[in-house]
Length: 285
Image (cartoon, rainbow, N blue to C red; front, side, top):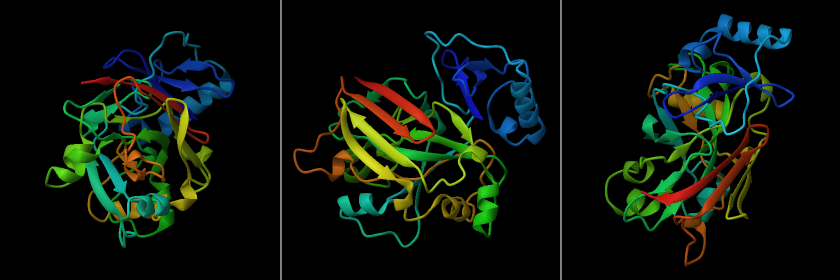
């Protein structure tokens, strides 16, 4: 299934995109697409049954905002330097273990919402990423099979980053990763049964129509299952939590000088095979 949330900021309602591309209202069945729903197998089965029976009412998508596909996110865990190509372009050694950092849930916005370039920013960068959505409470997982069994589905994430804040301003990466609007998510949460192999997905990103990133999840240093298993050794993952799994080569930081960092007025578009597409216009904060 392709689950999503539509409507104004803070007042999104649950919806589903069917195989014909018609938007269907889930409001009569569930209150939201969130951790509570993703952990409730019976509720998900009711949605599937209603879809099969053809009783879900259609929604007019004209002018309807698409919000983040998951509500009430507890935490966003990120894996840094997780593609061989990206590590190489930044001159970083291949990590021996996953590099883990956090983004605040309030960085998450809809897939087509405005991204704000922070004040005094000169190095705002793009990063297309595969996001894992957790569906079962995970702690101390031991095997890849256990890890994948705890995944509810997948989505596109844009891990927007301010490189000066991240690298040159002291401390850890938090300053460059947690600026307002720095994690567009969606458009859909595609349930795990529709993504049989998360290591077989192409990822692409364009800036002002120019292809900048053209990668593949097979280039991940730590695959999806290992990322979930590893993170569960250090923190408890709850239904509705997100793991951003890193970005392929092609970011601005990896380009020759002058590096083409983002500015107000730029348009960024992203897509991942089977997971939809995002489009953001940048404005000054």
